[in-house]
Structures are given as C-alpha cells and as structure tokens.
Image: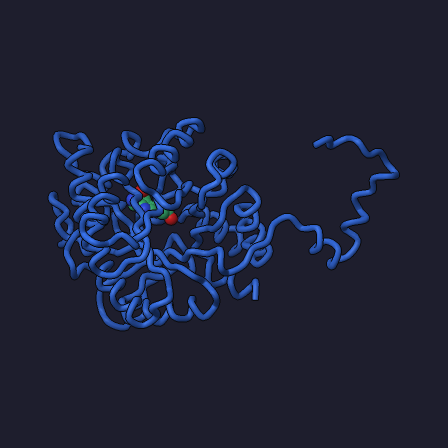
Length: 331
Ligand code: PBG
C-alpha cells in the first residue's frame, strides 16, 4: 500500500469525517456487548454483596446474587462471564485441596448459573492462588514454585470445573506444560467440548493489585510471581508462548494486562490470526475509576474509548469489569 500517493487537495481526509453517517460508513472497527467477557467475584453466603474497596463499583456476590447478575448481563447481550472465588482464609492450605473440591464456590456458581442461564458461557480460572496458603499460583516448596507437581493439581482443578459444567477453562497460572496436560485430561475424561482460553502472555504486572484484594490473596502472597509470569520487558517471548499453547491445545489466547500491552495484542493477532483476547485488569479499572471519581475523565466516553482500543489492536474480545456498564452504553 502506498500511503503517500495523494496530495492535497486531491486528498482531503475531512471528506470522510464530515458527519456521523459517513464516519460510521468508513469506520474500521466496531464494538458491541458480544465482545465482552465479564469477570466476577464470588463470596460465601446468601443474599450477600460486598464492595471491593480498590475497585469502586465492583462487588463480590454470593451465588444466588451472582446468578441474578449473570442473568442481567446475559439480557444485556454479554455472552460470557469469568468466575473468581473469594476463598475464606480457613480453606487456604499448603496442598490447595479446595481447588478441586466439587463444592467449592467456583463449581457451585458454575452449576447454579448453567442451570439458570444455560446459554451464558461460563469461564473459570485455573490457578492455585485463591486456595494457596502461600498465595502463589503454584505449590511452594523450599521457597520455590514447583512446576510439574503444580500442573498435576491444575489438571485436577480443571477436571472438577469440567464436571461442574464449565464451558471454557482459563489457565492463568503460567506453569509450563499445563495446557497440554489439561487438554489431554479433558479428552480422556469425555470433556472434549470444553474450550481452553489460555492466559498465554500473562505478564508479571503490578496492575493485578486490586484483584488480589478482591479474591483475598494479597495478604497471603510472599514475594512476587516473576519466576512464572512474563518479564514486562519481553515481546518476542509472548509469541513463543502463544505458539506453544496453541500447539498444546488452546482454542483461544489471552494477553494480560490489557491497555499497557496493546503492542502484544497486535503482534499476536498478526502472527497467528487466532481468537485473541485481552484482559483489562483490576489495576486498569482502578486507575480509570479514580480519574472518573475526580471528574478528571469523562466516564462513559473513556470506557468505550479504552474498549475500542482493544478491538483496534486486533482483539476479538475483552475481559472487562466494565462489561455491563459498557453494554448499556452501547445499546
Ligand atoms: C490468578 C489471577 C490473577 C488475575 C487473574 N487471575 C492475579 C495474579 O496473577 O496475581 C488478575 C486479574 C486482574 O488483575 O484483574 N492467577
């Protein structure tokens, strides 16, 4: 493509901007509620809603309340939600057994939502951090996060989610070999329709802070996650991880965090052309919310502008805490 073949006045870009109709006609990207996955937090109890202080407007909900919220989201045109349990401290252990308890919060919520709103796609998180007394995504032995033993546990966790009726499994743990192990266990156990959206390019980011409060993992965490999550300096490595996960059986891939990593989204989409997602994470939500609360940014316009940026950079969809609000704005 030759970008400089036309000179003023034969080229006047303002011709295709002169009114809304023509702007819409030539627009390259569109966004709608069907692009959203809504991450939600679950807590124990009946009829409970708790605010997450570092994420104004975001709530933890008991399963009954969550079912109600999920059904409202579905009515707004949101196709998918992603479950994150707030696990009581008493259930956090060294062996993380609560992660594959058929009656843990995540599995209970999956069954209840699939019963009430069968068409809503329910996605889960595979990682040990909500259940781990050490707060890490993997088992800690002698101060190190052990890979292969963790993968065995992740497989058990994924299978318990599949039995509960999950549609899409989202391994966010960043252990090596987990996608292949989970995929073959799903196949062997008759769950061949369960999808995997791999958190393939998940960076060791400080933008996850508010999330760790929301799931009650921040207090437990010792040290950082740099030995398993990606170095923020790397970009080629993201492509190698995506290639590896696709080969091991991932159906969709994710880049995380979102807005600071749009360069990675574009590279992944251009290189592989596979279903590509980004996660607009808790810290991004908190940062924007703080500016909205101070009237420093226009809430409605900025929400849409950030989500459009993901689509423009090649993402097919976005995990965003703004999903219900954005869906209403787009109606
Ligand atoms: C857990 C997990 C995290 C997020 C999603 N799954 C936190 C982490 O890796 O520490 C972050 C989501 C967010 O910040 O919104 N493995």
